[in-house]
Length: 386
Image 1: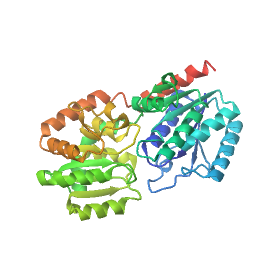
Image 2: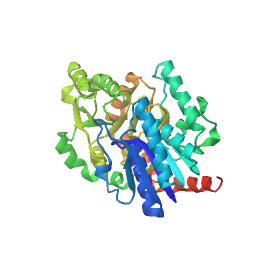
Image 3: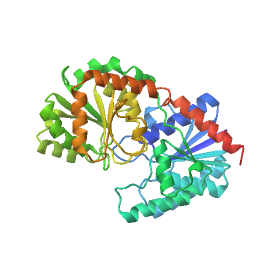
Image 4: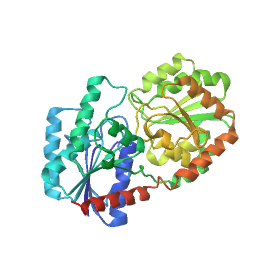
């Protein structure tokens, strides 16, 4: 089978890791001919492709395929995508991300690709946009949905969101959780002593970690707000931010103003291969993003045996189950966020129980091999009907 994946950029991020695993698995496990078409990996998040052996697949970088809306670049990218598809003649085009999804689906539909699939990693519209922006992105998604055969959601919540917005009917979606290499997370504990020493944490410290780009809507400010109350009740509480981005200085200034600098540590940009070691240094993962399909950090922490506290947004509730694998709190509720942190900080037995249940529930579900098998089955099913 000839499969072309299209994504806007291959930065260090969840959607990008998902896409890369899918490409490599199709080539290695099924012998498929795979081509990854992407734009330049611009931004402070780091570039992913250079960190992985991609020799088993073809990679094409289109300079005009950019994340930001730009009529001239977008027109060039659309033409370049059509030219690439006409030349390479894929049987399946599988698109990802908002811009890659819209232009990729339009190009594939225009040239008559037999099977066009799109993965919804996270909706481009959300409750925190102004009304005009939200309506614009919903209209774009409705238009693009008519130019593919089927859509994959990385969480049931994504399907619910798009159906509610009348992007497409429920039977146009299949949920396939985003895959990852689970083995390093199952064995993350071997790094704990080394990493806590490296990062300057003491045995008695309770470390709350957050893994996310330092970017708008990722919610770092809510962790900082909650920390004011947490450290009053748990003086040995520490907070580890893993990731980089344009808001770093602003967040550091906010922490300094709150006189919390000795409680916070910024790890900066970290390679995906190092994430298990950083999770090993944590006691609890905290996820306070305001929009996310299903953040990979949540199952990663649970597979590593660490409980998670999360805002109740999008797909988080599908893995963070209060009283079973962690604590789910209402979005923006920093008071309850702080209470949940204090509760877990003061109960190591509860932390262990929640983490172990998360590992038991989600290890197999999030294996990248399981994801690719399910995605390829979907390709075959739609190929047989087109």
